[in-house]
Length: 332
Image (cartoon, rainbow, N blue to C red; front, top):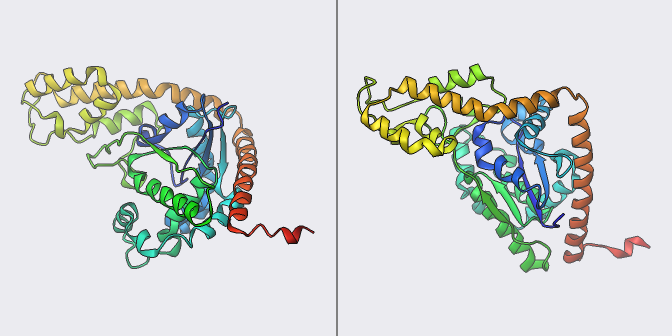
């Protein structure tokens, strides 16, 4: 296998959804045949916003691995590991924390947006403000060339690139400058610009056919369209947005019939529900098969975390040698 490394991950704060799939999962799992891939479950990072729900992590981690498997993760080709099982990540975070200023962290638009949405401006923790540094360590410990993420993660990738470049300038070339591989941004079922677990506007990868249909039928459409025969505007319709992503071949036809008032919103959404359920059926089938193997998640994480520790230790030794902190005199 190509030694070129791919690294990405997710926080286990709930079920994965279609936004995760088009944003990152699709790209990352398509890279497994060509590259050496590491997929991290960032359980420590989940504490930055869910510190009072640490007891939920075990269930969320198991669900996330099953979602990965359903979406195309192949444990024979790639490694999936737990952030908390790779101590080298914490050590590299400490080193990187001295390379990033506080004003730089506070300029991160993703951090600012999350602080505002979650009402954290006056009670922000050190861990929350600093998690982009931790994320940079998560990425760079594996010295990847590619990091497949959703488009909203671009600021974090840029910071990781900055940290890598600053370390290399300060201590010597250790880190390749990683490249983000960005997927699409899927709107929420309520028409918000982003699908999110905390927004209540997501279609989960594990949703049943009935659940998918119910969520689609509640999607926001053109608010000015009162009757089925009224001309509609697909550009403001959430259901049409999903057509452009999951039914691209027929999207233009759907738009034309909508603008002519030839098809009502209810009929159109029912057809979209069929499209999404057809798309998600293979996910459901794979998930059911994996759920019948109770030890599979444990084995995947134990093996993946062992591989991640080995890879991480290689990098950490290079980092300390470059910094003059190898301390060979301690070795006798």
